[in-house]
Amino acid sequence: MRRTAKAGAVLVPATLLVTGLFIGHAVADSSDPNAPVAGRPTGVSARATTVPPRVFAVVNSDGTKLRGKGVASTTKTSTGTYDVRFSRNISKCAWTGTVGLGGFEGSTGPAMITITGRAGTNNGLFVTTFNGSAAATDEPFLVVVVCK
Image 1: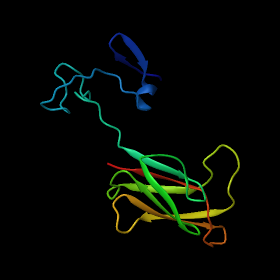
Image 2 (image 1 turned 60 degrees about the vertical axis):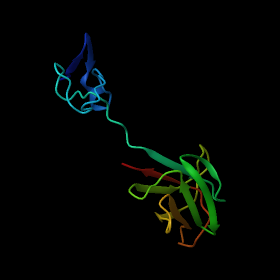
Image 3 (image 1 turned 90 degrees about the vertical axis):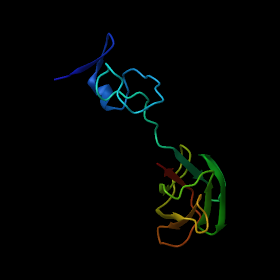
Image 4 (image 1 turned 135 degrees about the vertical axis):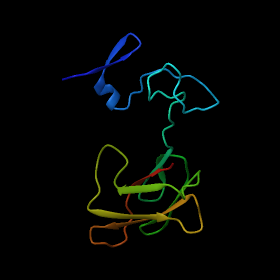
């Protein structure tokens, strides 16, 4: 059975609401930005929720940045080790990464990556890459940082 939600005079399939589409009225009210607006259905807030900021870096095997968002610098420090710095504090964020080319053709062989916060910084990651035999090897990679 397919249900619909009414928004004004428009009927919208409920499946759109599940995928994250916000349907409702936005009303600016600086006294309490998260309070329900009088006369509006419960769940409609005065201000839309902000998506958590995300930064990322796609890095070539030589340590150069291919692309990214919020990247201050990328540096290859030695074979298979990299320093990636962002233009924001990431100390209370989560990060993840993977070995792989940043384009639409080609691939790497079997490889591994480790990522940790860069000691002495609040905006850096220490990245190491290895081949399938666990030997430090220069590999292209990408990292994603998600913050509150």
